[in-house]
Length: 380
Image (cartoon, rainbow, N blue to C red):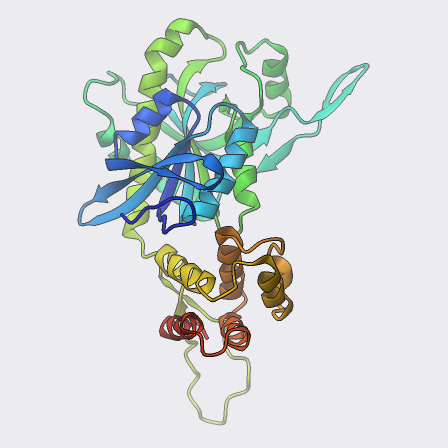
């Protein structure tokens, strides 16, 4: 798998985060040979192999602990270490309406129900909302429309057939124990289309939002209902709901693997007038960088002498006026290098990056290797 910690060559195609141990165990059961990896800033991950037919991908997993802040911080660390193609938060939630125990909800939006103004006359909500990646929502709808994901549930886990829904969730820092509680009434008034409530979904999507080009989705199994909540439900249904959510998540990951992550995207058509009688030109197509492409380019860029020093990093960004302002300027960490490459890819400035690196490090083998790899990928 080639996973190493502390600035090494850690790679993962997908990262799956959970809050609780019972959720983590359910996710881990789908992986082969999970091994620990120590990420930067002390966060611990495991990386294993997920096989789907003839394909296999590396999947990193991490337990964030309860709450939105921890989820947001874990997204940042996972993105910096693995630069994944997608990130999922998988676990349990309390059902608010239109769901049964063991059902699965993939969130097409997550509401922050706690933001608002507390006045003498009552609480006035000022609700914030984050949405997941459009492509993952579309894929989640396809998975929910069929029953294939249920084959991943352990035999005898649930005598009923759980359903999957693609609907909004609400998230906050409280454990909501009843539908007639203050928060329960608030949810009914301000988040009436939310099917369930959790404690991490909003922070998770907030963390994904600030990491450009990171696709993210929240998947929850229903372990209790606000109208019928008790400790017995937690003991019986948390493991079941965790396994159902994990089954749905890995069905979605399996569908992701069948799509080509490097599928070509059309360039903007040439708008220059054609010569009389000339056939229209077919727009050139270019492939999108895969996670492995990005990882190799990051390693090559940071191997250029002096590039990991803050002074040289700022010098590089100063020479890239079209993209340098979109990247952090305080350090030359792997996260900043990855961000720079993504911006250069999006703005088609890879050739400009190569030219500047060649000026800063003339005759350097790493600079020459960067130019060679960019040319081989057709990104100049």
